[in-house]
Each structure stands twice: as structure tokens, then as C-alpha cells.
Length: 421
Image 1 (tube, rainbow, N blue to C red):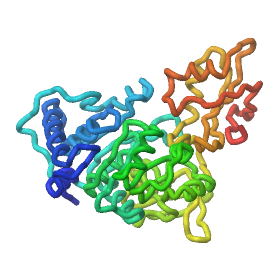
Image 2 (cartoon, helix red, strand yellow; image 1 turned 135 degrees about the vertical axis):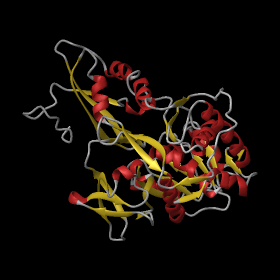
Image 3 (tube, rainbow, N blue to C red; image 1 turned 30 degrees about the vertical axis):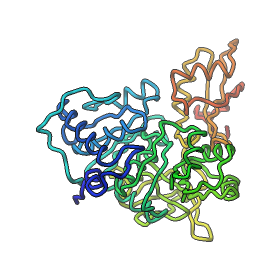
Image 4 (tube, rainbow, N blue to C red; image 1 turned 60 degrees about the horizontal axis):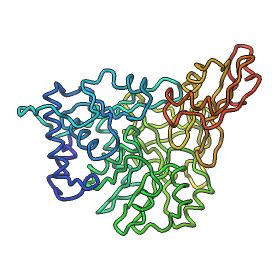
């Protein structure tokens, strides 16, 4: 099924409307077309992967839409990630964009005016439940249905302004850019989460109507005095466990919260405000595992996505996520595979054995905690081990706590009893 290409459609109907920060739709289209012709000059053709090693902002938006105008596949990558991660995720890309393109334009380049909903649009890397990062291929249809489902769940304002302090290498951040183009709204993009900057934006007289946050960042904003943002319709809150205490604090401050549960493999939202998106089907399988199906689910996970999460239906018919089947740690909205952290710490000469677990944490949802057994006669501090991890792990993967023990109490076959730890 073909639909009008999102950016050209928005620019044709509302060229002067703001698209990304102060960039209008007319300007965004013009710059994206120029970048698309530059990419063609570099050899990019339909179906090629193009890595976007750029921070969130106007430049990212221009090059992202340029990739879509060619029918190529965008691969957003966090430029602050560990070097080996970047190397692995840029492998196979026809072009890696890490700065403004300087090539000449191909005047004969053919730019698309439609999107094929079945075609791949984006590859996003999700750590999943194992140490190996998983490339999730999301189609135009996945994003279109997600945008439609989100619009039904939280509505669409005629002058929508969606504040995004999330990275575009995550589906939660990238979806804001896509939904804004589909609905001709404005994406207010910040290159990182900064309490003062987000607070100032929310409290401005022309501030955002929506903002996407994780529990940690909402808590920080409430601590900083967030109250009664004048234009805010919803805080779309997801990325980790949401405590009743946090929801109560938000309600007391007159901050409207729409709790959301989602996954990369389902193109962001699955359940919002307790109910599945209208286009999404949620069932509870063996062990009450949450099972997801519908047009937002990536083709590689069809016909049914196994979430790895345990849920239950409340008396009010709303879905509650009560735990995880896997050992994946979700800290501050970021997925952390414990095996990745264990492998980094095991490289230290003083570490004989190590296990990494997620501990409940009021600020982070879960805190990455390493339990370390030292080599006989060795001596090293927790701070030294955390510093050792700095060049080896991304910031969200580094342990926030390190404990020392004489033994990890492995099973007779050498397996970690991670849940006991």
C-alpha cells in the first residue's frame, strides 16, 4: 500500500508551519531534498542502509528525511555510544553521516513522493534480553499505525508541539520526529535531557503540548519545581517501572501523566493509559507473559511478539506490567544487558568473578549493580572499577553500585543464580 510521503505532504499543505525547532516544513523539505541528492552522488540507492551518527536536532531531522526520500533505510546510532558498538552498528551501511554532507548533488536524483507501508524505513538496535544487540527493522507501516494508535490514545492538538529530550537512536525519541511529520506538528528537539532546559520549555507561555519522559526524568523535573505547565496535555511516560508514588506526585503538581508501555519491536507504544493501542492486540500467554500482535509489530517478530514481560489485567480492565521474565535491566529508560557489563568488568586483572543485576531504585527504576569476587590477594575499590568501565561501556551501562563478596554462589553447573543475587 502506498501513501503520500510524509514530509512532502506536510510541506505542501503547511510550508510555513514549524517542523523541527525553528525549521519550517518548507525549509526542512528543501534541505532534505538537497541532502538526498548528495546521498545519491555518494552512491546511495533504494534499500541501502545509511547510518546517522548524529545527535538529536535539526541536522539529524534533515538527513533522516533525506534517507526516506530515497527509499533507503535509516540507521540512527547514538554518537556517544562505546566505540565497538558504533563500529558494529555502522558496519554494512553504504554511508555514515557524522557531520554535514560536503559532496556535490546529483541533479538527476529521483526523490520519492510516496512511501510503501510494507517497505523497511528504519533499523533500530535494541539490546533485547541478551548481550548481543538486536537489529530491529521497522517499516513505514509500523510507524504509520503507531502514529495512528498514539493519536487515538492521547489525541492530536491542532497546534501540537511535542518536546523530545530523548535520543533518536531509541524508538521513543525517533517516533516523535515521525509522528510530528505525519500530523504536521512541531517536534521540539533537545540534544540531551537537561532539567533546567526542559523545565523552562514546559513552563513557557508557548510551551509544548506533549513531552516524552522516563520516570527518572519526570522525578527530576518534579524535584526542580515542575507544576501546572500551561499548554501541557500529557506527559507520555514510559521506559521503565512507574511507581504509584511518582504518579501521585505528578497529580499533586497538576502534571497530567499518560503511562505507556512499549518496545522497539512494536515501534514504541503498546499500551497507553492502561489500554492497548486500538490497532494492537495484547494477550497473556504462558506464565502471564505479555504477547503482542498487530501492524505496529516488526515483521521479524510476527505473527506474535513475545515481550519477556509479565502482566496482569486489573479489575478495571487495564494492563499492569508486573515484572520481567528475562534478566534485562531497565535503568533510567535504557536497556542494559547484564552480560555486557559483566564482560567489561571481567577484563580487570583483579576480578575473579562477577555478576550484574538490576536492583530496585527510586530514581532509576533499576540500578545497575555489579557483585564482584576479587582474585586472591588483589585489592581494588568500587570507584576504580567504575572508572575502568568508562571507556568500555556506554554511560547507562556503567555500574552505579559495586559490591564485593567472597563467592557468587553459582550452581553446580556454574550458572549464576541471578535472581537470588
